[in-house]
Structure formats: C-alpha cells, structure tokens
Length: 471
Image (tube, rainbow, N blue to C red):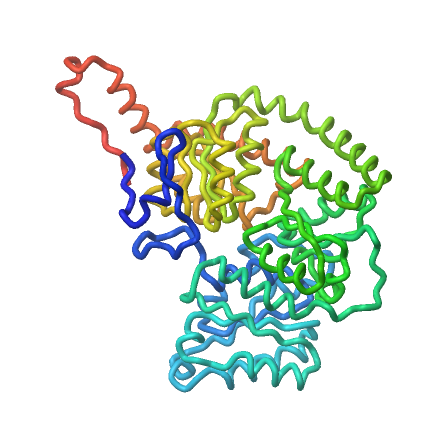
C-alpha cells in the first residue's frame, strides 16, 4: 500500500477503483517535496529560447544556475540565450534594495551584447524586499532604446503555471510592432514549441511541405522581430497547452486570432496536428500535400516501430511530465510499441485533461497530479513498471529503483517530436528497457527474491529471513 498524504488523497486516482473527481490546479502540499518547479522556472522555460534577447536574473546567484545548459533549446543564429546573467544580490542589497545594482547591470550589458530586447526575471527575494523592477526597466528602455521587460516571476507566489502566465504577459508586450513585413494568407504561429534538440526545425519543415508559413515560433529558435509580426498570422497552433494557452487567449481577444491545441509527439497526435491545420485553411492544395506528407512519413516509420514492438510487447511504463497534453501522446505512442501505461501524471494538468487521461488508459492505471518522489516510486513498484518517462528530477527515482528511464522533458538532447522523433523515442525506450544492467540492480534483485519467496509454500520458508530493499 503506497503512503499518500491526507491533503493529497484526492490528487491520486486509480481507474476502475476510485469514484471521486481527481483534484488538481492547487498549490503543492507543504512538506510533500513536489516534483513541480517554481514560478521563476516556469517563466524562464518559456522566454529564454528567444535567442537574440538578453535574459537577466534579478536575485541571488543561485537562481542563475537554471540556464541554457539545463534545456537543449537550439538556435539557427544568435546564441545570446545561452549566457546566464545575474545581478547576484547579496546581504547588502537585501537590506538596502537592489534597484541600483539592477540598473547598473542593464546599463553595462546592453551596450556590450546589443540585444534586440531584455527580459528581467524577478525572483523570490525581489518580492520580499520590494524592488520596483518595472520602474528600472522603463528607465533603461528609454535610455537604451530597446524593449526592457520585467517578468514578475517571484517563486513563492504560485506554481510553475504562474510563471508561464508571467512569461506570456511579457511576450505579449512585444507583439503588434510590425505592420509591414509580408505575411502569407496561409500562416500560423506555433506556441509552446521550444526547439529542444532542434524539434522546431522538424515541425517547420512539415508545415513548409504542406504549403503553410510559420510566421513566428514562440519561443523555440525565436527572435524578437518575429514576435513583432505574430499578431498578423491567421491561426495559433498551441503545442504546449499548459504554458501557452493563456497567450493564445490574449491574442484571440486582442487580435482575433483563433487557436487550436495540438501535440507533436507520437504518430496519431502528430498526424492530427497537421490535418487540423490543413482543415482550418480549407485549401485543396494544402490538403493534398498534407496527405502525401503523412503517407510518406508513416510508411517510412511503421516498419521500424514493428521491430521494437517485438521486443517491448507486454512491457509496462510510468509517465510523469510537466504538461498533460504530452502525457496523452505518451500513452498513445507507447501502445504503438506494445507497451501499457500503468502510472501517468503531470505537474500542470486541468480537470478536462485528467478526464481525457481516464478515457485513454486501462483499468488499474494510477493517475497522479503534482506527485512527489515517495508516491511516484511507490506506485511504480506496485504496478511493476519497466521504465519511467519524465524529466531531470525523475531520472534519479528511476535509477534508484533499477528501471529504465527516458528523458522526455526540456533537458533532452534527442529530438522526440514529429515522425522522426517517434522513431527516436521507440529506440530510446527499447535501449533503456532492454539494457542488461538492470539485472544487477539491488532493488531489482530484492524485488525478485521477494517474489520468489512469496511463490514458495509457507511452511517451507518459515526459517528464511525477509530480504530488505536498500534505500
């Protein structure tokens, strides 16, 4: 029986057993050691792939550790986003205020690096000492002649999702600047695609082959100028619903741009994403080219997946990711290679998201909202998962339990989006699950010994010692 904190009992749901409505969209339970990241992390995730902008963290140096190297967002040109800048606040600034240090930092950095815009991220301590970051930004913007934007991302005031909102509000202020650059009548913006391992380039190529122009990608391989004309695209395609739906709604209200939600992971969702865009434009040429693209890509991919399926049929997986839309795609993608998802959850899912997860999972599947290491590892062992698919914070959990791991979060260096990405995903899952190293795991050995002992008649094991599972 997995131990669950009383305050979290309704955030854990087992299909076929529990009848209550799964609770979500609430602050993390104190003391639960949530897998969620902070508000600042959420804002940084969204904005810093804008490669020609300056990203300055206003706070202690520790916050600056969250930088490009923890996220594989690539650029086809400038790489200013790879540099991490901090005002490095110390005790003196905490007591007397850090506005002077912020002004000095911006005034020194902008002339040297010549960014197209600057983002200033407020951290926890800024919310406590009350620095007027917006006022400093207005002053520097007037002096330096570029947009200088405060990002109100003090970590203590909410969850990672609040960081997404702060980032969306900052990005929105850059829109509407360019009324002259030509924009195709068959144009879209991609929202919530961050070019991890070059995935934006894969998706842009698909749309190009369909006859669709990508006016702006927010924010993978992004440029400040692209945001300036994004308001003139005909459709917003929201890939990461958790981070960018708020911005899509702002653009719909202000500029009248409709939006659709898509996922670029797995065969079914990738195909649907392309067909949904084609259907929106109602153009026979685009529809025909989309059909040809899908036929070509799927016919190339399926034989490869068939080989992996032979080895993976019947294996079990656990999935814990940031956004629930990605979780949907993982459940479907795993089925294509013969695997069942026995544990699935997300950090930022909505009630509608979890209802859909209930529909597409099997009886006995555990669904988790904002879980913690104790719960996650307990349910993985209880359900006998062979692999955990998650991010950097989930990796140690998998390895301590002696099971495979697939990095499907923003730290990855392997493209997993699109049809090519589905092939890479299947290969990575196969390689990890099939590795012979797991038979040497103390946790696996102890579990196997326990299972073997349970299978022996009781009278034959009365003198045997129960093997312990090491911490």
